[in-house]
Image (cartoon, rainbow, N blue to C red):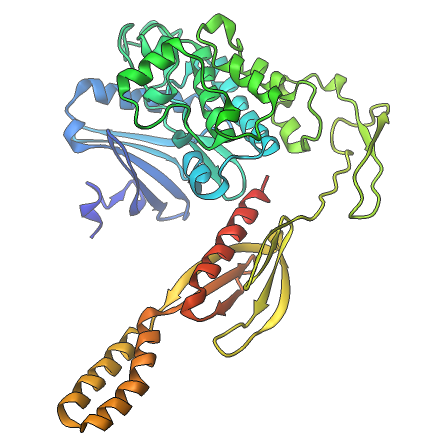
Length: 463
């Protein structure tokens, strides 16, 4: 069964479960260690490329570079296996979704504070890699994962390069590697790259985070996109999403300058520009750059919390008593969505416990930090529906006209409901206890909307 997925169903004590990704060079599989139960991602070089010495060397290069990187926001390498007829990377399994999918399916334009928090974590990882003279060369939303716990992981160092390694011959000057939309001008020209090329690619990624759009329309040809990358600045972010502030537009402009000398010269400088004179960032966002932040200069602000509905006001800075841990933070509840199935806020959901077709249920509340997940399903009684349709067919063969009308009138509506199905919402607590809400088919769209907005609130509550 598993052999159709991979050359080896069990690889060095790892039991292959299923494919989870596919790229130009091979497949990625979810696997579990047979003894200790740890989930891993196994990247396999496609069998058609195993004999290609250049691709084998690139695959080995990814393993060599990943082995040098130990950072919370970079995917970990556990092992590298090389055989004459196969090559494998055994990597950390990241349970989440690519940033690209998160923007398309969950968030749309990411609010500025959340976008900054995410970018600071990515910059922290890039600063670490750049300090080791490693340039990623393919930074883009699909190579950045957001986990269900709100963490960020950079993936796919397949074309990364150690810029000061004289023995690195993976890509000569004049050879273009990367993904077109996110390439820097010098990368597009096939010139020698340094850390500033990654920062340009991250600037384009940041543009997409803030606007939910790639800066280049999809109808443009590769030649037209290439011309724009080399000759024209990115469009104004506000032209695609009016919520982008002037301050972040200035950051985007500097990050994506055409000449490397006009960009941020390091990931630390990029981080400093994001923090600049901004207030309101969480402790988590500040701690993301603490390795490059002078803690002796951290000044605390004491907050004067009032009632829940009152605005939070900050007093003048007082003498430092600790770096960050004493800063008070109070979250104000905000209604995000409301419909027939309940209410979603940034802190909790209200729902109808035990709601069913003929039962309204009891109004309950559940905090987002107590919820594990929420799912939408359609429950169909297919066997019942087919049986009733068969019964109607038999009635037409053996019963009188009026009896057929009576049988059809009774059975058809029930068969229709059984086959169309009922929307079901399943809410899972962190203690694995499950709650269900079921309703009629005409409320399918409302059920899906409630689940969608709850998932979005649940995901964003991680940050």
